[in-house]
Length: 144
Image (cartoon, rainbow, N blue to C red; front, side, top):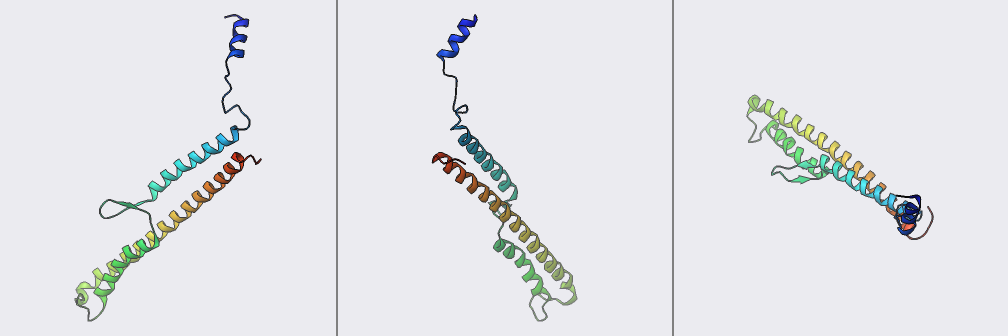
């Protein structure tokens, strides 16, 4: 090809896309950032979900933590309570203590999971709101 042919091709074809348009580039960058944030949150959320007894996934919550560990605490306390139908004297002392300790451990661990999940969700929602606000301002014609 000659130099004249190259110049002719460049003049005839409009190769400037939206990314080269100075008005649309920041909008596209924000949309990309928003998409990346959504993708990261999906991965993070999947890693933090808890699998239930029948295989279903659910978000860790304080109520779930108290219910899950509270059952063991209640059974352990019932076994250790004198006069309880489950109390068999010294023979049930060790299982009762194991139930109490296991229950308290489950509650503590699941409460920490719920706290971590809530903090991660709040970070995601805050970042998402900031990006959406910037995007609205840009699409509305306001400078950043």
